Amino acid sequence: MDTSTFDRAVDARVHNYLAGERDNFAVDRAAVDEMITVVPQLRVMAVANREFIHRATRVLVERGITQFLDIGAGIPAHRNLHDTVQGAVPHARVIYVDYDPIVAVHARALLRSTAAGRVEYLDADLRYPATILTSSVLHDTFDLSRPVGLILSAVLPSLAAEDYPWSAVEAIRDTLPAGSCMVVTHLASDIPSGSGAAAAKLTAIAASHGLTLFPRGKAKVIRFFGDWELLDPGLVPVSAWRPNEPGYDYDLSGAWAGVACKR
Ligand SMILES: C[S@@+](CC[C@H](N)C(=O)[O-])C[C@H]1O[C@@H](n2cnc3c(N)ncnc32)[C@H](O)[C@@H]1O
Image (cartoon, rainbow, N blue to C red; front, side, top):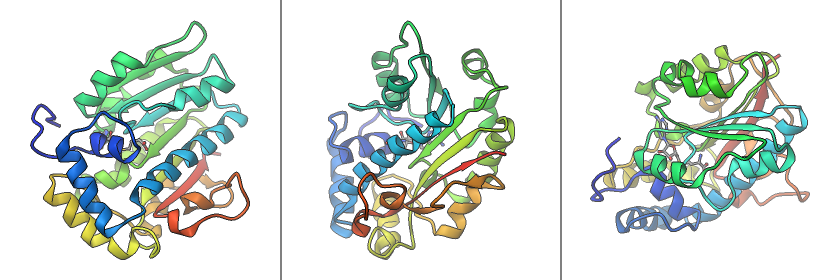
């Protein structure tokens, strides 16, 4: 992906702006501002998504997983996945993957391994999973006989059906050993209080700013898990997945979220 010009919005910077961070440009902010006219809670949805990822990651750590592959990682933020993981298990290993060179620049500048644990970055495209699965970064960093936590947070809506996102994810699932778990969030086309009612408009606005964005319904999202076993409570709106507080705000829940593990 060419992010050398700033005449159109790009995913990573749009998400960075949504998350209240500062590594973005006027074109990205214009895209978000227009999307917010049709989905006013888009910003709180981004926060709810991040909170879910940290909750789910802690569950994976409790299951003994200490290696994490975060694909479509985005520009590093104030609290990153490895902060949560290595806060609990200092020797844990995390590989961030993204296809956007701007993410690579930020990641290489900001993400550091510690004396105990490792943090690596891989410049690769999820649409071509073999580039991830055969990479020396993956094989040098992980012990692939041991379980891996696969994180796919808000990345799959960037892939069109023609990109075969289900096949790409299946290729990765098939490579990971028993005990591995995957965490998925996906912008919903069928949660009316979230982006659902405005899914088509959201896609159109995104396209007019040069972004690809495909909200999907529950049946299509659940297919990403294949035959892996969904942990309770299944595929649910992000804020409903094991919330820290009882009850949840349905209005924040514009995305599906789930965690599944390989037997
Ligand atoms: C909406 S952001 C989500 C960032 C982060 N995962 C989060 O949840 O905060 C999507 C990220 O996926 C990346 N991305 C989109 N398509 C990709 C692909 N085919 N391969 C790798 N990364 C991709 C974008 O560059 C962007 O950084």
